[in-house]
Every structure is written in C-alpha cells, then in structure tokens.
Amino acid sequence: MTLWPQRWLIFAFICLLAGCATTQPSAGGNPVGFTESGQASFYADLHQNRKTASGELYLHGLKTAAHRTLPFGSSVRVTNIQNGKSVVVKINDRGPFVRGRIIDLSKSAFSSIGNTSSGLLNVRIEVIR
Image 1 (cartoon, one colour):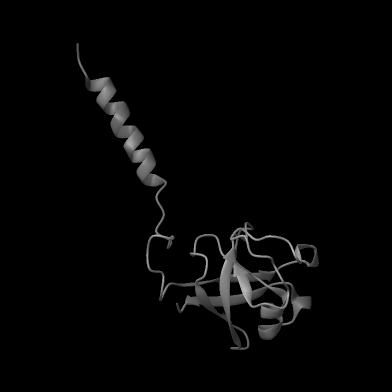
Image 2 (image 1 turned 30 degrees about the vertical axis):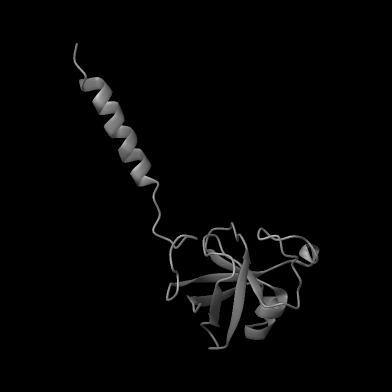
C-alpha cells in the first residue's frame, strides 16, 4: 500500500496553514518602529463608558485607540498626513474592522489632529514604545 495520497494531503494542509500566516506585529514581538499608513476613524458616542477589549473603560477624553494587532499598552504616534499634526495614543482596544481603516481613535485624540466632522483622516502611525 502506498502512502503517497496521505503525504500529499499533509503537505497541502501545511501549505494552507502557511498561507494564513501574517507579518504584522503581535503580542510576542517588539513592535517599536512599526509604521503603517491608512485611514483613522473615531469612536461613536455610544461607546462612552463601555469596556474595551483590554478591559479598560472607553472614555472620550483619554488619548486611546484600537488597532487590530498591536499589543495593548503600546504607545503610537498618529500623524495626520494632510496637516502634519500628531498625537500619541495608547492601544487598549481591538479594531477597526472596516476595510482601509487602520486605527480607531478616541474622540479627543481624533479632535487633536483633525476635525471630527470629516469622520476619517489619512494618517501614518508609528509605534514609539
């Protein structure tokens, strides 16, 4: 009896798993220096005083943000590409889960680099610690 079909299935399964790998920073690595560009949004009022993924409460007045993969507690400089203004935020939540958006800022953080009436900003983010 030949083992060829079984080995082929195992090889195909390993290739499939390898294709799911990501190169974005995770909790196990040191993300300092990581940069990314895309759109930033901000939290809607209904999130005020609700728990974030890290267990902290979301408060509009704090300089916090959500990112899909950066470790909680990371400090990130967010720069508005259009006007050059920047703000440093602490990652304490997960998201945003909308295509093209890379970070979801607290309302006060967003307001410090742009106008909330715009809804979205083109930004560059850099992990600083």
